[in-house]
Image: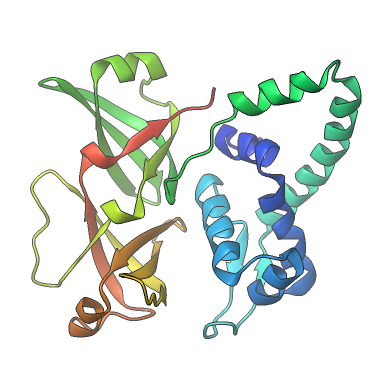
Length: 254
């Protein structure tokens, strides 16, 4: 079974994040793996969330425990991806020997895209419908979950989107809003049910809320501490989130 193209490209251009899987395998803990990798606990989970979202199956499985507690281990798919990374390291060494000029590496680097969007969800197009001056592109995320994106017909054509296309949906954390139990999401918006996996307090603004979807993918959102306290939202709480289809950006393998 081959890896999804977005994950394969991610392995090629972000090896330090894939290398984190090795530390998880060795340390059995996100906290210890982050320390071994020389990064923060938050940065480690950002990397793992991104990898899990781009893979067809979660690569890291987390056991129960509070912040800094509990354990983590690679899933069978995570172990397979780690083996692939190790093979890619050997291929990379061969590539570096084959590069004719140092400028070759600079050129390839400019062709690789990195994004500031915190949420990256892999999906498959299962519908494209014209709505006025936009196309509504429906994406199946797996596990029965679906979201819509609104893009221009030109973008649909340029990306070559059709039913069955594999895409990555990009969504900034600030565009994901938590709903109170009595709230009704705006008409036409995407609405998903999620479980709060962690709340990271911030002294400089809204708290970061990490959310687990039913299909194993994750989302990141922001919410004020007062709002969270008012509605009793904490780790393990089940919440609804919504975001507008016009905020969903789509990307495809180059």
